[in-house]
Image (cartoon, rainbow, N blue to C red; front, side):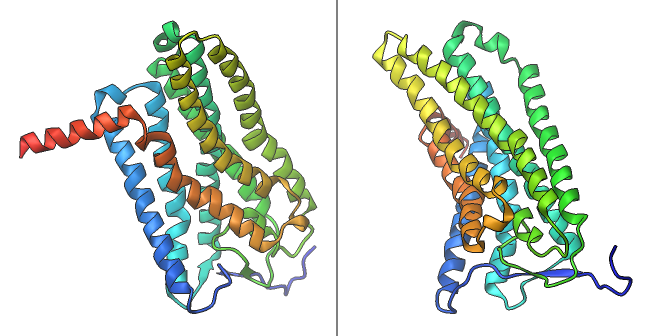
Amino acid sequence: MHEPNQSFVTEFILLGFSLSPRTTPLLFSSFLMIYLLIILGNGLITILICLDSHLHTPMYFFIGILSVLDVGYTTTTVPQMLVHLASQRKTISFSSCVAQMYIFLVLGVTESWLFAIMSVDRYVAICHPLRYKVIMSPWVCGIMAIFCGLWGVISAVVYTIFAMRLPYCGPNKINHFFCEVPAVLKLACADTSVNDQVDFILGFSVILIPLSLIFVIYVNIFIAILKIHSAQGRLKASSTCASHITVVTMFCVPAMVMYMKPGSEATPEEDKKLALFYNVISAFLNPIIYSLRNKDVKKAVLKVIGRRGVSE
């Protein structure tokens, strides 16, 4: 039981990165440029998928959702980080911290499951090409997308409730660049062992189960690829799979390390690097790895440019 006169924090201070005053402008410029490129790259992918009917396929439907999620969760954290880099005041209210934590978790968990759904799409396309359009119908794709979103909402509610039910009575300095669950839990004025167990258990449902599903599916995909007689066909199938595996690895592996290790084993600097990787770097590289080097997307870009040139 807490003492009646015990005070609780009303705002947190985000310490961000440990930098010298000379390097702060460089870091601000770098993150601003990366953030603008994330908006531009993912926004371009989303617009092209909406405009070009040739991209109205299950694979690009999921890539479009991925682009929207990337823009969403980077926007949840990066603009605030830029403001704090540019000013002396680095505070965030308690309610804003909870909101940021929840929104980031919703989008992150949704993306984790979306990667698993995308691997199912690739499995059907490669192993059952003749039945692909029947199996991956718009209705089925919509149900899959809704499932990812609902799982994200439910998991985020559990994570946030268990994190914010604890008392926070000081200190109020979060050694991170945004309100992420592991960093906030270190400030709790109570035992967080139950939270560590909850995080580990939920980690199975939001990270390990999707990764296991992806692994099993890709084992079957690679077996099917080896049976393809055409060298060009094997190359095309392998290229699509390689892109997806790269994107999944960049996002899921750092997130798994972050959320499934005990809080006592985590160091703030390691946490910041991991969060930076799956929050910013993966969102920046996703359009390049997954779409912008794709022939279909290049054709769509040329078609939109050509259509614009004709109208002018």
